[in-house]
Image 1 (cartoon, rainbow, N blue to C red):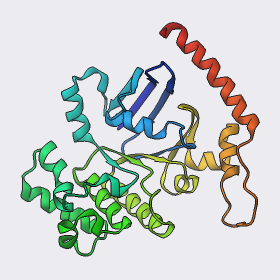
Image 2 (image 1 turned 60 degrees about the vertical axis):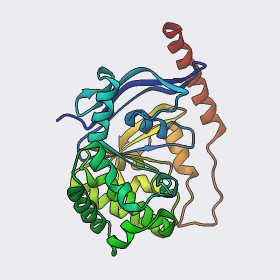
Image 3 (image 1 turned 45 degrees about the vertical axis):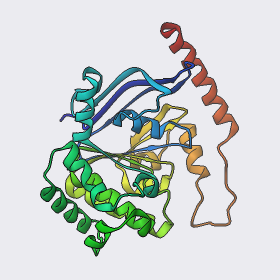
Image 4 (image 1 turned 180 degrees about the horizontal axis):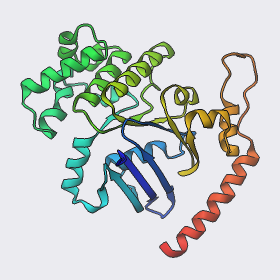
Length: 292
């Protein structure tokens, strides 16, 4: 079976040559949810941006391969690459308010991708969006489609963006911490919606998060990152049952325990971080030698 996403040896650098992604390799199979987990600055969102072709101007891909359903994005022209990414991928962003244009009604924003990128006619696009709004349990879709983003709650805005992401039946969705801006109760509802839609549509998801609780609930496989480097990957049950890397174990130990709310937090041990820093510095020296 051809993977929905295959990343091999991906390194990305800043203008000064510093690496922000370090030889990252991972695979997302069709219909699979793979979580990318790590602390802030670990490179999770950077990987998602590389897949979607929206890296910041200050970051360039230095080496490696990104394949979408067997097609190497590096082999395509910029126009062909944008067309393939537009047809096969979608994004569920972190902050639904900033992701939506405040000066436009919800309706046109949710159908733009269907009409302008995929070439659907307006009637077909409108019908598809209404169908998806029903699937994400929006009770009054007509009112929502006429609304501006500020007229909706955070949970409603995120449901709209989830509907828009699934509307064109993408083969891969990058979900970039899609519950971070929501309160805990709404987070649970949104995670259930994403999981239900993913199962129904058979969509592969690259799920970016720093929350190990979310990882346990939604993913089948996990990739743990630190400073742009993969330190561990495993099936989700195996990772939680027997984490192999000291950093993974430290992350788990640092997670608040809801069963013991008065327990002291355990920060990641300095010795673990020092060991990782030494390992990364050595890898970067080896990498720079042939790359200049």
